[in-house]
Every structure is written in C-alpha cells, then in structure tokens.
Amino acid sequence: MKKSIFEIIENRSIAKDVCLMRLTGDTSAITAPGQFVNIELEGFYLRRPISVCDWEYGVLTIIYKVVGKGTEKMSAMTAGEKLELLTGLGNGYDMTLSGERPLLVGGGAGVPPMYGLCRRLTAQGKRPTVILGFNTAADVFFAEEFKALGANVIVTTVDGGVGVKGFVTDAMKELEYSYFYSCGPEPMLKALYNASATEGQLSFEERMGCGFGACMGCTCKTKYGNKRICKDGPVLKKEEVVW
Amino acid sequence: MNTKVNLCGVELQNPVIPASGTFGFGYEFTQWYDINCLGAISVKGTTEKERFGNIQPRIAEAPSGLLNAVGLQNPGIEAVLAHELPELRKVYSQPIIANISGFSKEEYVKSCALADADENVDLIEVNISCPNVHAGGMSFGTEASSALEITKAVKAVCKKPVIIKLTPNVTDIASIAKACEDGGADGVSLINTLLAMRIDLKTKKPLLGNVTGGLSGPAVFPVAVRMVYQVYNAVKIPIIGMGGVSSAEDVIELMLAGATAVQVGAANLKDPCACRDIIANLPKAMEKYNITDLSKITGGAH
Image 1 (cartoon, rainbow over the protein chains, first blue to last red):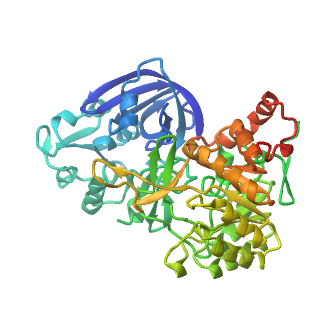
Image 2 (image 1 turned 45 degrees about the horizontal axis):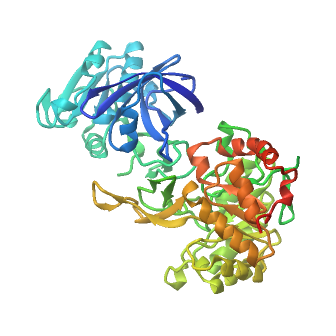
Image 3 (image 1 turned 90 degrees about the vertical axis):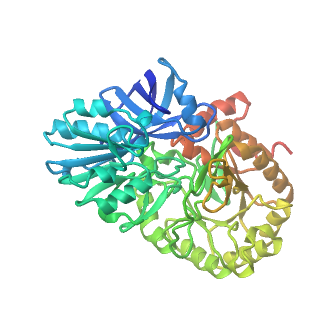
C-alpha cells in the first residue's frame, strides 16, 4: 500500500455515465488485478474507492461509473490535474487457480478489473472466455479492447440491444471453462455463484470508510470468519461466500 | 521544545493518540509508518464476547466528516489480550490504552479486570456510550447516576488508570464528567461521536443499516472544543480531548480548552498517515504560537 500523487493524462467518457481515466504516478504497490485505489477529492471527506482496470510501470488506468457527486467531480477533471491516491489496496485475484480456459465475467462497473486480469492471463498463454454484461447498448464498453487481447468475448444486454439478450448467466449455459473470475453487482454475483459449474472468485463491493482495513466499516461474514471487503477482499473465493 | 505530557501518571512522548475504532489494533498501520512515533494508541473497542457488529451499510459520508455504525465489531476481550495486543507489542513500545465497552455493569467489570491484569495494557479507557440492556437500551453515559455506578464498579477492580469516555449526546456533559470524577475516575475522554443520520434519496430510506450512526470528523471539532472547555471547568482529573482533530493546530486548540492529551479519529480513515503528520508538524505549530512546553498549555484558554 502506498500514498502518492498521480497526474491525469486523459479522462474521457466511454459509455453512458462511464469514464476512463489514465494517470501517471508510482504504481509499484499494485500487485494483482482486482485491487483498487482510493482517491482523495477536494471537497469530499471520504476517498472514492475505484477498481484498477490496468496498470504498467508508471501508468494507471481506471474506469469508473458516475454514480454521485464525487464521481461527477472526477468526470469533469482534465489532463494535468493531480490527485492523491492510496494504491495497492485489497487482495486482488489469485491467477494461479485459473486453469487453461478460465471464464471472466464482468457486469457494468464490474467490467474494468476483468481487463487487467484478462491481459495477464492471455500473456501467460491461457485462453479466457469473457462475458461482459450490460443493461443496454448505450452502456457497453471495452468489448473491442478485450477482443484485441485475443479473448473470446460475449456481450450480453438485458434489453437485447447488442449481443445475447439477457443476463451473463444466460450466456454461460453452453460454455466449458476451467475456473471463473467475476466482478459486478451483487445480484449478478449471486446468480453466477448458483449457475457456475466450477470453483471461482467473486469481487464484492461495499460502502467503505478507510479502504485499508482500519475502520471495520465494510465487514462481511464468510465461511472463514468475518472479512473486511477492503483489506481481506474485495475478492472472495466461491467456497467461502455466505449470501 | 517539549512535547511530552503526563497522562494519569503515564508519560507520553507527545499528546497524540489514535482514537479507538479508527486504528484497529495498530499493527496494520506499520505498513504506512513507524507507529512508535505515537504518544499512545487507544485500540479497537472491546466487549466481553466477540461481536460482528451492525448490518451493512455501516458508513456514510457527511460534509466535513462521516457517520459510522460499525457496532463494536471485535473478537472479544480474551482474543484481544491473547492475540491482538501481543501482535501490537511486537512492533510498538509506547503505551497501549485498552478500550472497553459493555452492555451491563457485570460485563464492564469482567472485561476491565482482565485488561487491568494484562501486561500489555497501560491505561484503560471505558466507553460508556453503549446502551444498557438492563435499562431499556438507555446509554450508561447519558445519566450521571449510571456513569457513577459504572465508574465505581470498574475502579474497584482496576489498579491501572481508568479513563471514562463520554458521549456528547447529553444536555450537560460537565455533570456526567463530575459524576465520573466522584466515582474515582483517573481521567475522562471526550467526545465520542454525535448521534446522526442520513437518508438515501434514491431509495428514500435511511442510508445506514442501523438507521442512525455516529458523526465524526472536522464537522464536530468546535463541539469538542466547547465540551472539553466545559468539562475542564467542572473536574480536576485529566481530560483526553477528541473530535475531528486533523492538524497540529487542532491539538493545541483542544489542549488550550483543557485537554492533557488528544485523540485523533476520523482523520486516520481519510489519511492513514494523519497521526504521523500531525506529530511531525507539532514543533512547527508550537513555534508559531510561542509555545515551548506543551504540557504547560492545558486549560490555557480559561
């Protein structure tokens, strides 16, 4: 975990209420896809926890949904502006369990961390299938970027505007996969938990105070005891999830 | 320049103490800085038995602060003494303040006696803001009589200094502090969080799972200054001031109001390095306001 200043390189809208921000700064504390950063914003007491979409040496990419005043303020920021970030927060995905044909499932604002994960898995020679779930065609983002990584990509929309009509679980019925990784709204995670044929990992979201394990604000129950979503999560293994 | 203060007979290298509930059991903060720079640590509030705490959500934002309704999640006094404090002692050699909560007099007495007998504990802070299960859920800290009763009972089983932590959700905090002094308390700490609430406009329902929560952060700082000032007028025992402290200047202000030492709470959650930075900035702030000995400024505003 590190606290440091990042500078915005670009910040643009990529779908309805969804923005992509790239920043330069010290990314050395980020060790696994699925981790998050906690962003200080002037005029707001608490930081905004945002999942890492991807990172490399000195460059961080985040994709965030505009859901309130904080993310609205972020969406208006421009290149050259600086932000203080806590980086390397959370456990992230364990890639050693993927097998050869992992299934990656992202729903809405849960899509971004799947990108950094997918890029690393394909670099290891794995052959992931990616299901990206959205509500409507206007919400869809990053389908082409995932394809460019060489992944087999399936898009679903609830209204059928693009891709498979329905939920992510409707697209996985015929699929064969070795393991699954997921991030998305809780109803999606629960449906996936029930529909999945293998073990896997699920990334959860909760209102956080600190984001680094101090306040116990985001604790949930698991089969292995109480866990702080920010520190012991956000990624939980399927076997430990209690609904 | 002197930053040392004496808190109930325990010397602190500086008056800055992370407040209970905002610093866990301390050792995880070594990932951010060397916590041996702290004056002391008040560890996570502990009850006799393990508690999961309240349902989610437990956190809400506020203008210049936050609401929490964690609900005293903790592993229970025996686990704290057996595992958490030894873990903290491995990386930290300054004083440790155990923070004890309870839902009955018997529970307070049992937990405080165990904490008092533990070699890792230097001072005991007793949080009397919890509801009394035997009195319709009314907080022990809202009545002078029940504050007196808990103080006496706890003092009877403790040899170490006992500091009673007061709730600000009362009409006259000075009379509650006086009752604690009469009961033999070695000090009082204040203020705990202010009872507060937010409503989610999207769902049109209370935002916190517990409906209400405690407000902390810079929003409550002037309330803390006022209450510490009033309590200083009413008692002779040392006061630990807290409530929205975020800077070295805030530390000085609360000490002038009457505090001997100062706790930092919400600021730790916004910035994990808050206490380290406040301590580092103390000498500069002292110099600016012509202070050479911090221990001499307590109550200076009176």
